[in-house]
Image 1 (tube, rainbow, N blue to C red):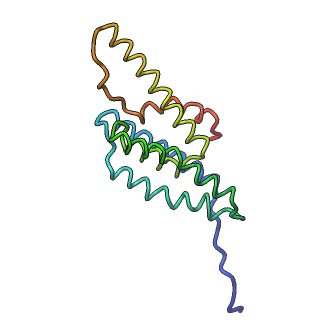
Image 2: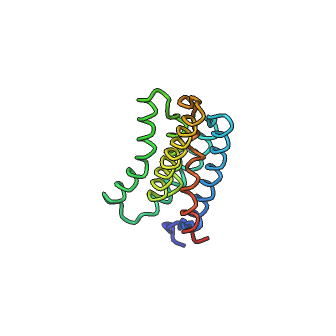
Image 3: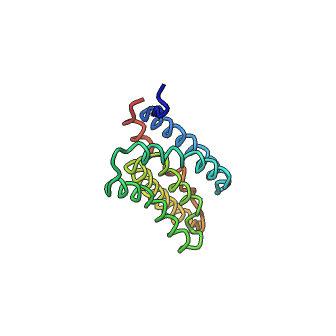
Length: 171
């Protein structure tokens, strides 16, 4: 018997984990969207639960399974979190005009989905918000109503960006 026998650590199926991450993200998107619609805020404990769930999965899928950790991998990881950090900056500068929960949502979403999905959801949310805001302002002008102080929940407005991602997913 060899005393120095190497212990084999089984590798988890990364495809299964990637799909699991996406389903967790969908659940997070649904929960955050409902709370954002109903209360215009997402409870911190929901964010915390998904940070604690997503961070180990993110580390495993994006760092521990890489055979070579080079500059391009680090670049991809940093770029993935930029939309959320940009929203966080805008939220702080605008003194809450853009909710900090939206920024936290985008940052946590980057733990679960890839950069193209993060950017697609980010851009589609703002395009949808722009179109809806323009329609509301035009309606307010026609009806002589002041709708300038009305707020929109951003997370549910990101929903149209989820459709193409779901259509390209191989389940």
